[in-house]
Length: 146
Image (cartoon, rainbow, N blue to C red; front, top):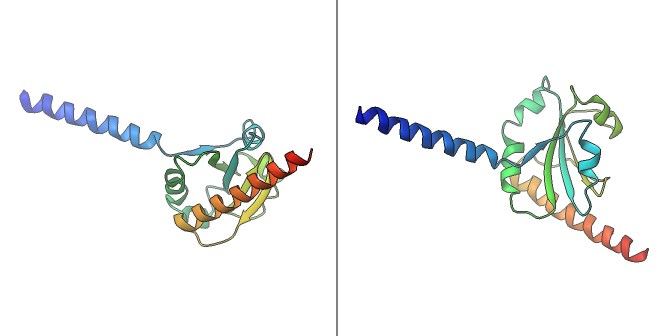
């Protein structure tokens, strides 16, 4: 009986840890109901992946986008999102998505950059940090001119 309850405690702890681990993946699924409001958040950069489930190039990304989400944890005012263009066609049409995967950076509701570089976490992270900083500086400069 002791080993059963000990196994139960261990299994419960592992389950709890797995929930904690998955909860930290900072990739937010955007839909037609949430996309516009989210990417318009003031002083926030959104790096968004646009994909469809049947695309082999999207499938080949594996856990790259989730890994990027984890790598971006703690970065203020930068969010990582994804849009399934099969179920959110209106969003993808609105932002001119014609191929998959497509990676775009939005700041204060405006598209500011499209990523076309290497598909690894470090390259993606460097791009989003650099472009978000440029977009924030430009937005603050534009705001000061008003």
